[in-house]
Length: 246
Image (cartoon, rainbow, N blue to C red; front, side, top):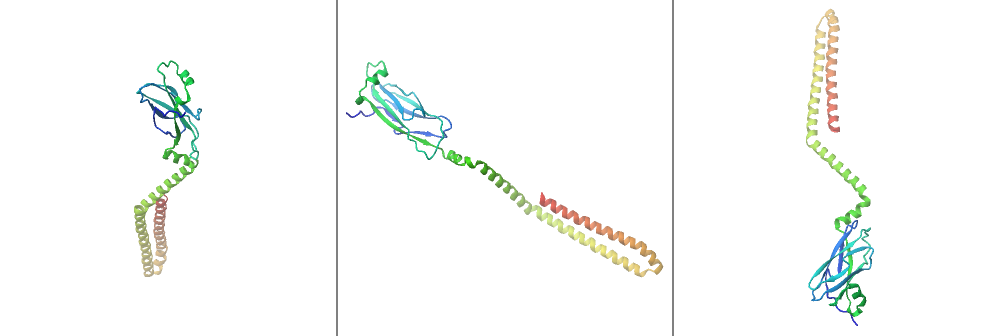
């Protein structure tokens, strides 16, 4: 004889969905409603009893009322390639009016009096958690790449800022200093030419005397001008190198 149709209303009707991550207990709720005018006994069974904790897993639903059953999935190592084969069954039985012990009612029930509904289990991993799961093995590499990219962007930003402002100012400063060095060289050359002209016009005796003194003067002035030019040139090179390094 065929079994009776389920009198209880199940919500959800066909699937129990568990949403990860599954590193901790994941709970979903199964609502059982009794729309009839008689009390109904129920039991919740599963094909994987060690993987789930069900509270309550049995009891009596009064007429016109409902009950929420908490189905708790225990933590496990989730494999997205593995399909869940777990199933749940809600078994029910119309309680007799004179019922005193539910266990005896279940034992004495005839097969045709039993009603059942089956639900399958579905595991869902949030998109962001799936991405994190896929990236776990490459976490250190990704971190290094991000740091490298950050350093590269920082360097590009510094170089860009230097190109736009500092380099132009440094080049203008270099050009000005080079012109100053050139001017000093020309002045030094003119001084030497003037000294030579004065030397040729002086007498032999005074020429010898002035030659000695003016020679020292020329050497001192020439040395002084060259020293200034070299110091300025070294200063320019130092400034340029310092700016580029910073």
